Amino acid sequence: MKRVYPKEEVCMACRLCEIACIVEHSEYKDIFWAFRSEKPRQLPKTKVEELGPLSFSANCRHCKEPACIEACITGALYRTDEEHPVLIDKDRCVACWMCIMACPYGSINRDERNGTRHSTKCDLCPDKEIPACVKACPNRALIYEER
Image (cartoon, rainbow, N blue to C red):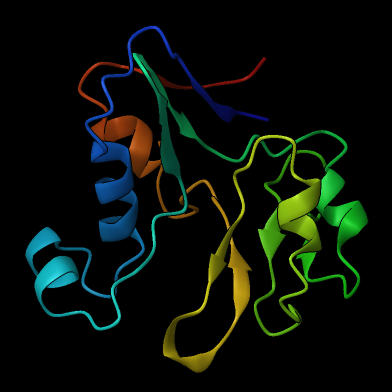
C-alpha cells in the first residue's frame, strides 16, 4: 500500500500541505470558498511540526499494525484490509481520544467543530490518485510511495 512519507531535510514549513488538505476536504474544493465562505472551515488532516530548523508534515502512516485501531474502544477506527487506509467512522467515535494517545506519529487530531467531537486524520484523499498534500508540496518534502 502506498503511504505518504515526509522528508524533513527539505521541508520548509510553508504549510501548503495543510492548505491543500483543507481545500481538498472542503465542500467546494476551491481555495477561495474553502477559506472565505465555509463555516466552520475544514481542519487539515496533516499538521506541520516545527522545532528549530527542523520541520515536517506529520501525516498518518496507515501502519501495518495500527495502534489507533487497537486503542479504539468503539471500533470507530477501522480498515478493510492492509491494502486500504485506516479510516474513522465519525458516527461511532465517542471522542475518548485513545487513538490520539496511541498514535506513535502524532497524526490524529481532535475535531470539535459544530458542537460535535470526534477524531480526524488523513484519509489519503480517496478521490485522488495522489494525495492533495503531496501534490501541493513545492519542495517535494512529501513522498507518496510503497515501501
